[in-house]
Length: 107
Ligand code: SF4
Image 1 (tube, rainbow, N blue to C red):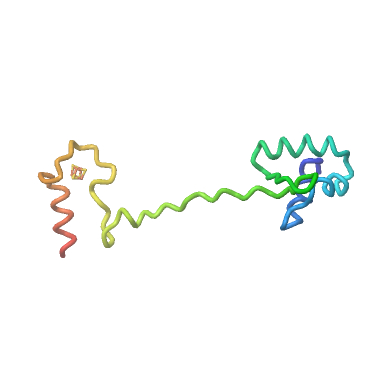
Image 2: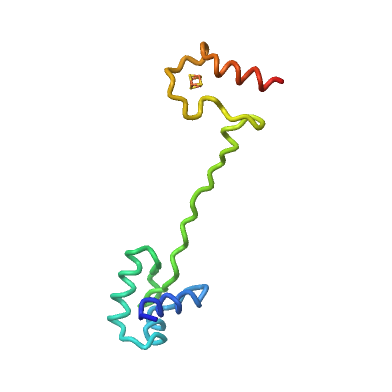
C-alpha cells in the first residue's frame, strides 16, 4: 500500500474526519509530505480540507451522485412520446404521428 492509499484509508476510517496533525502522525510521515499529498488529493477531488484551529479537518470528499434520470416523464401511461428524438420539421397541430399517439392515449 502506498502512502496515498494509506492516508485515504486513515481518513476513511474516521467518519467525522481526522485532523491533519493527527493524520501525519498516524501515517508515520512528516507533516510537509502529508500536506503535499493532501493538497494533491484535494485537487483531485478525493478529499476536503476545512480549517480547524491551527490545522485542517480532513474528510473524504462526498461522492457525487449522478442525478437519476426519470424517463417516466417521457411517458404517458406506458406510451412513449413520438416527439422524443423526432427530427421532423415540427408543426404539432398538423402532425399525424402526434395525433395518432394522442388518440391512442384516450383508448
Ligand atoms: S409533433 Fe410530430 S413532428 Fe413535432 S416533434 Fe412531435 S412527432 Fe415530431
